[in-house]
Image 1 (cartoon, rainbow, N blue to C red):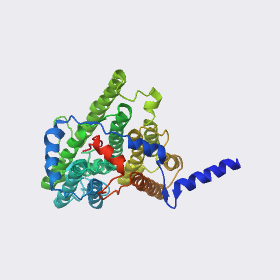
Image 2 (tube, rainbow, N blue to C red):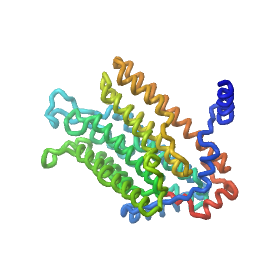
Image 3 (cartoon, one colour):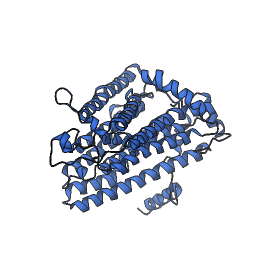
Image 4 (cartoon, rainbow, N blue to C red):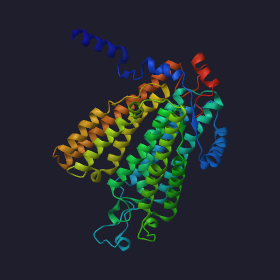
Length: 432
């Protein structure tokens, strides 16, 4: 027992210095050295519109600008468009129709988001999508491709799912006027989007190839057009009925489910089945192949347990914070899957973040908390989860930079000697 305690102390002393902790270790880092990026993008929109556009835009970028810097600025723009809507429509009520439109005398209309804010939101989203599209091109253009580039790009993309999807809800708002969908239904959509993103990387974990879903670029284009339309016509333009008493909000909901469950998931399952049949993938046993889905499934179960059993309907009390919390939980778990598939190591079964999440959700769902107590629990858990995710991200970036002898946000003149030059020579990280 005493010897075990000594070993544990020595282990943490070796891997943790101050606030810095080595999350990866030598096995995972060595796996990154032999990583080769393999990707298939068959979307007509990407091939014939977005990539030709990005190929021209990247020429405007100075050669000294690091690809990861473009990725970071793009992510900041993504967060920015979410924060703008947070300021002007925190509770998703700005789009509530007035009584003369809704016919509900007891439901006051919301204060519409100004047109210039919608324009700003659209511009920030456009910049985010564009910078995300040219960062890989800038890496190849400057000969600075590294495994960190793809990890940093896809890791931030996993966190961006909450900011992109959550912002769309402000266009239609919650269903106080009966023209949209409830916060709980939007909560379900959020998890649908999270799993769609996860499925792409789970697919790569088993096939070795990242099949980019058609829906990503299309969803960004649709979001941009919705914001521009809202700026021109105002949010009340969406308070219309289509034949069959169908409203725009539920139509968008159907499109998300159809795109993810009707197209992305079946395609991923087919690609995995094909890789097993042809022997081109990892050919893992069934339980090993399913391993990356366990943590996210448990996280979703915990969150749904709290939301469904909440004594104060927590998803109604602070919808935006609940969305952000779930998105950050998902991003942390997904980043670890991305690392596992890039380093060809075994995916973890249970993520450490499940401990505070599980405890918080069980307390929220089982304890008979008052409204103030439950909100305090929500905000406390959100802070804890955010700090855990930020710490994980910063430490992983530092660890990879130290291993490959590169700088995260500037181009190194001689990147990591043979390690990185070999990677560049083999055409690895042809990320877009």
